[in-house]
Image (cartoon, rainbow, N blue to C red; front, side, top):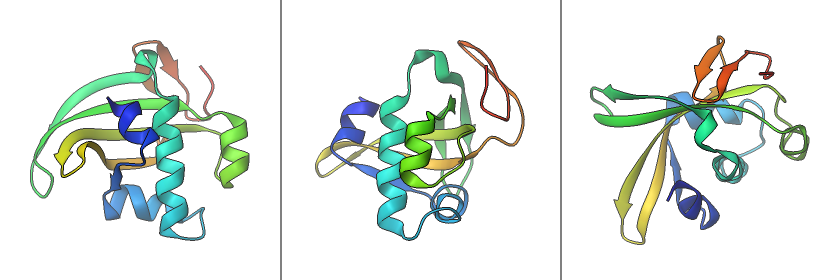
Length: 124
Protein backbone atom coordinates (compact mmCIF):
# COMPACT_ATOMS: atom_id res chain seq x y z
CA UNK A 1 0.00 0.00 0.00
CA UNK A 2 2.89 2.36 0.74
CA UNK A 3 4.36 1.76 -2.70
CA UNK A 4 1.00 2.20 -4.44
CA UNK A 5 0.56 5.58 -2.77
CA UNK A 6 4.15 6.52 -3.63
CA UNK A 7 3.68 5.54 -7.30
CA UNK A 8 0.72 7.93 -7.43
CA UNK A 9 2.77 10.57 -5.54
CA UNK A 10 0.23 10.61 -2.70
CA UNK A 11 2.86 11.63 -0.18
CA UNK A 12 2.90 14.35 2.45
CA UNK A 13 5.87 15.47 4.53
CA UNK A 14 6.05 16.90 8.02
CA UNK A 15 7.74 20.26 7.93
CA UNK A 16 10.41 19.83 10.63
CA UNK A 17 11.94 16.33 10.33
CA UNK A 18 11.02 15.48 6.75
CA UNK A 19 10.50 18.32 4.28
CA UNK A 20 13.03 20.74 5.78
CA UNK A 21 15.60 17.95 6.22
CA UNK A 22 15.32 16.92 2.57
CA UNK A 23 15.28 20.53 1.35
CA UNK A 24 18.76 20.99 2.83
CA UNK A 25 19.92 19.03 -0.23
CA UNK A 26 17.25 19.86 -2.82
CA UNK A 27 16.23 23.07 -4.49
CA UNK A 28 12.51 23.18 -3.69
CA UNK A 29 9.53 21.46 -2.12
CA UNK A 30 8.43 19.77 -5.35
CA UNK A 31 11.83 18.06 -5.61
CA UNK A 32 11.53 16.98 -1.96
CA UNK A 33 8.18 15.28 -2.59
CA UNK A 34 9.50 13.51 -5.70
CA UNK A 35 12.53 12.30 -3.77
CA UNK A 36 10.31 11.05 -0.94
CA UNK A 37 8.10 9.11 -3.35
CA UNK A 38 11.13 7.49 -4.98
CA UNK A 39 12.58 6.50 -1.59
CA UNK A 40 9.25 4.94 -0.58
CA UNK A 41 9.27 2.85 -3.76
CA UNK A 42 12.59 1.33 -2.66
CA UNK A 43 11.35 0.10 0.74
CA UNK A 44 11.04 -3.60 1.44
CA UNK A 45 10.32 -5.78 4.47
CA UNK A 46 14.03 -6.01 5.36
CA UNK A 47 14.09 -2.22 5.93
CA UNK A 48 11.50 -2.33 8.72
CA UNK A 49 12.77 -1.28 12.18
CA UNK A 50 9.75 -0.98 14.50
CA UNK A 51 6.34 0.58 15.08
CA UNK A 52 6.23 3.52 17.48
CA UNK A 53 3.40 5.55 19.02
CA UNK A 54 3.73 9.33 18.82
CA UNK A 55 2.08 12.07 20.83
CA UNK A 56 0.75 15.36 19.42
CA UNK A 57 1.29 17.15 17.14
CA UNK A 58 1.20 13.88 15.11
CA UNK A 59 -0.45 11.30 17.37
CA UNK A 60 -0.77 7.70 16.28
CA UNK A 61 1.24 4.66 15.33
CA UNK A 62 4.07 5.06 12.82
CA UNK A 63 6.28 2.48 11.13
CA UNK A 64 10.01 3.17 11.20
CA UNK A 65 12.28 2.09 8.36
CA UNK A 66 15.98 2.47 7.60
CA UNK A 67 17.08 2.25 3.99
CA UNK A 68 20.49 2.15 2.37
CA UNK A 69 19.81 4.61 -0.44
CA UNK A 70 20.87 3.42 -3.89
CA UNK A 71 23.67 5.54 -5.32
CA UNK A 72 21.67 6.04 -8.55
CA UNK A 73 18.83 7.67 -6.58
CA UNK A 74 21.25 9.75 -4.53
CA UNK A 75 23.00 11.02 -7.68
CA UNK A 76 19.73 11.77 -9.47
CA UNK A 77 18.51 13.90 -6.56
CA UNK A 78 21.81 15.28 -5.28
CA UNK A 79 21.46 13.80 -1.78
CA UNK A 80 23.95 11.74 0.25
CA UNK A 81 24.23 8.06 -0.69
CA UNK A 82 23.97 6.87 2.91
CA UNK A 83 21.46 5.29 5.24
CA UNK A 84 18.14 7.14 5.43
CA UNK A 85 15.62 7.09 8.30
CA UNK A 86 11.88 7.11 7.59
CA UNK A 87 8.95 7.26 9.99
CA UNK A 88 5.64 6.94 8.19
CA UNK A 89 1.93 6.39 8.55
CA UNK A 90 -0.70 5.40 5.99
CA UNK A 91 -3.60 7.84 6.08
CA UNK A 92 -6.91 8.10 4.26
CA UNK A 93 -7.53 11.16 2.13
CA UNK A 94 -9.94 12.12 -0.66
CA UNK A 95 -8.06 9.98 -3.19
CA UNK A 96 -7.55 6.86 -1.08
CA UNK A 97 -4.53 6.03 1.01
CA UNK A 98 -1.61 8.40 1.20
CA UNK A 99 1.70 8.22 3.03
CA UNK A 100 2.53 10.79 5.70
CA UNK A 101 6.24 10.98 6.46
CA UNK A 102 6.89 12.52 9.85
CA UNK A 103 10.64 11.79 9.44
CA UNK A 104 12.84 11.52 6.35
CA UNK A 105 16.52 12.27 6.86
CA UNK A 106 19.99 10.69 6.80
CA UNK A 107 20.58 8.18 9.60
CA UNK A 108 21.89 9.72 12.79
CA UNK A 109 23.12 6.38 14.21
CA UNK A 110 23.34 2.70 13.30
CA UNK A 111 19.95 0.93 13.22
CA UNK A 112 18.92 -2.70 13.55
CA UNK A 113 16.34 -3.58 10.90
CA UNK A 114 14.46 -6.78 10.11
CA UNK A 115 17.16 -7.52 7.51
CA UNK A 116 20.08 -6.77 9.84
CA UNK A 117 22.06 -3.74 10.91
CA UNK A 118 22.30 -0.65 8.73
CA UNK A 119 25.30 1.50 9.51
CA UNK A 120 25.04 5.26 9.50
CA UNK A 121 27.18 5.35 6.36
CA UNK A 122 24.54 3.25 4.59
CA UNK A 123 26.25 -0.13 4.47
CA UNK A 124 24.79 -3.33 5.96
